[in-house]
Length: 182
Image (cartoon, rainbow, N blue to C red; front, side):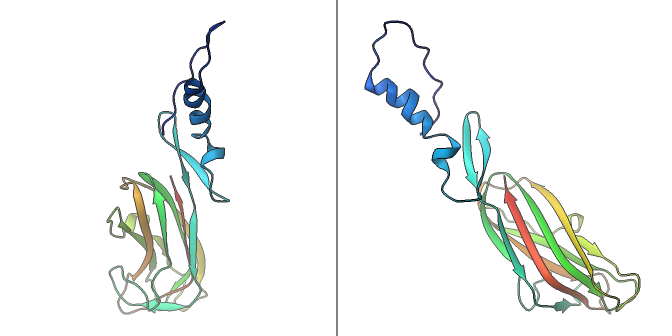
């Protein structure tokens, strides 16, 4: 169904059931109230006079795990990951407590996208932390990224990790990903 611009009614015109169905019933079925199926959902414009329900998703992995990989990789417990129905854009938030066992090395957390879109993790979108001294307390941080150029449909966002120094282990705990599909 699609939204139809309402008819301009004139005095003494005969109102038919078909006109009521097109101009009242069908248009009311295109409102957010009619399309809402999930508590907490949001609505985005998908075109002129068109909306779609979007459901934010989040996931967490609490376990502390590490990597010495200089390229993005999964940890022993992969993710966290969420699958959302999105349009061409999304807001992605990655959060973790990070540290590195090597002096002057960094721990980086980014995300890859699979499904309707295939996209590798990017350094420009990574949450990066470098403690003042090695073996220091972890740094709790988050990074928000506005992702554009997605293929609309079901997209899975998966957190991935790397170390900037292979002599040191990047350690991640309390890992979270939150995706607001647009």
